[in-house]
Amino acid sequence: MDWGTYTTLAVEADGPALVVTVDRPQAMNALAGQVVDDLLALTGVLAGIGRDGDWPVRGMILTGAGAKAFVAGADIREMSAMGADEAEAYARRMHQVTLRLEALPVPVVAAVNGFALGGGCELAMACDFIYASANASFGQPEVNLGLVPGFGGSVRLQQRVGVGQARELIYTGRRVPADEALRIGLANAVFPDAEALMAAAKATVAEIATKAPTAVANAKSALNGIYGLDVEAGLELEARSFHEAFTTEDSVAGRAAFLAKETPVFPGR
Ligand code: CO8
Image 1 (tube, rainbow, N blue to C red):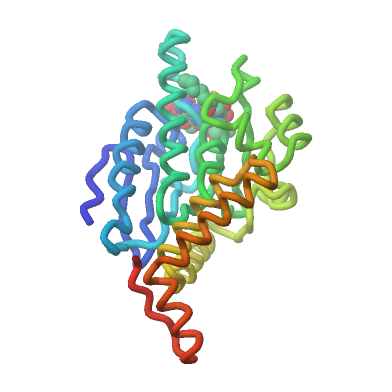
Image 2 (image 1 turned 120 degrees about the horizontal axis):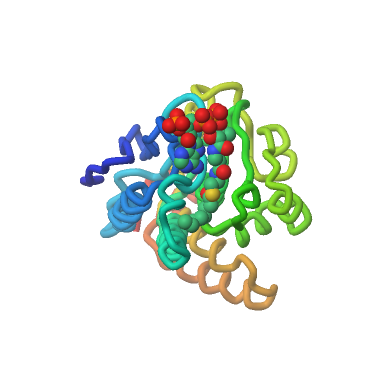
């Protein structure tokens, strides 16, 4: 698959993982308009993964270039030259990026290797789950700028850490270190340094790559779709998702391999 070339993103397949690095270390990888455009273009390309049973990668790892930051938010310099309508349009474009990440047919792991602030924290929360290095820190510091979260934080922080923690973090703009992010459920795991972080993210994608591709894609889609529904509506969506899984060649192969006591080979359809 041709991943395309981007001004602000480095994109490289490493075994079953596609490693995407936001690459503006001089500005702490802040989300300038060009980064948003690049993420929109890339996620458009990645939406084709799995088509016709072709799975060139089985997961994406999103990280930031350099030793200090994952992403330090929207680009404050660029944003400061905008009027409110332009800023809103910018935020809405970034909403599209987050929705597209959630719609990808493969899991996305945020490998947070430093500051994940404002739009950076929001980008990480649009990933399926977050791994952090010990020097990572998270926060929604928009109140320091007289602003509020604009890239989905008002929605996804409450989902990730619950209403009380989300409110405290958004009202104070406080920065949360990696160990506290782990405690409140924002990060799934913390690793001593960036190297260990990337190794762990790749190992998890490799583990996922041994599973049925259509089942993982189906589970991701169902989990996203079910979030926020009431129990009855959620169970209804789960039933439809289960039905769909049952019709796949992957499921036929998986069940047959179990009964034959063999390791399944999944066709990816
Ligand atoms: N935007 C632009 N440039 C940035 C940003 C940013 N978000 N963050 C850092 N930089 C730049 C600095 O200006 C500096 O540039 P220069 O060397 O040219 O002066 C360089 O990166 C290094 O930064 P520091 O010298 O400040 O490095 P420190 O290690 O001292 O501090 C911090 C690092 C803590 C990350 C600090 O830079 C900081 O607080 N950054 C801002 C974090 C922040 O407030 N983020 C939230 C932004 S608002 C947001 O994301 C809302 C999203 C929705 C709005 C959408 C509507 C448009």
